[in-house]
Length: 300
Image 1 (cartoon, one colour):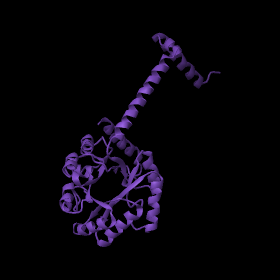
Image 2: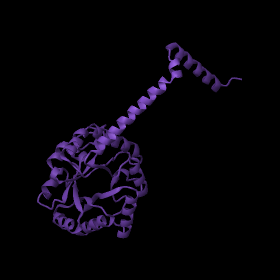
Image 3: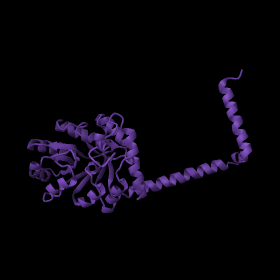
Image 4: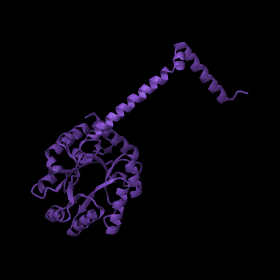
């Protein structure tokens, strides 16, 4: 008795054989030409992929992750997800390593991140409203083995921050947070206050918030490059206060211009993906975003 599955299988085979005979392709199946064509296509793709990886390897900066991307996940999940993205550097937000944690626990967490193969280069964004919070942030960074704090200290605390930078040997990058922020809304608002301070106090230039402030993020990088210590890369839906997060390449930002500026200027620190969309399921969008960035870099 012929089953429905047998009928479909036989019908499919018969249609395929008829089509092959009608188009004169049956002989090519037998002599292996299709197999050779497939091998050639595979070889070509492999060559193109290798060329793309080589091009990205020549980029002077390192792609990393701002762990706010995985804020709904714990530190172990965040490490695993970061590695799945093929990234080798991370800056931790306090969701993953609390600022209030005992220093021995902070050190142990830092050791765990590095043992997994990630460069734990920084933390943030860290807000500082008192001298006690400055001390806490720098002791935390030092214990974890981080070289950079991405921070938002109050204006009047900047002289104290400078002393902490000098005492602990940890850099601090002021983070611009867009048109709704009252402390450092734009890169210029931060740059103006640190121009005369220790050069280890610089900017974490958030490209998305710069765009939301109506600015050209690529031009901002060039303008304040002498103080750019870190970069957050992302995309937004509009170049104003209403701009929300979206996968890189789908928004309004000129990502190739930003990356070209960083390469041309010889930026050699970190470019951290901060994907703020899809809090509960960020991996697909983060992967799409970092894939777009890698594609642009391979074309430069």
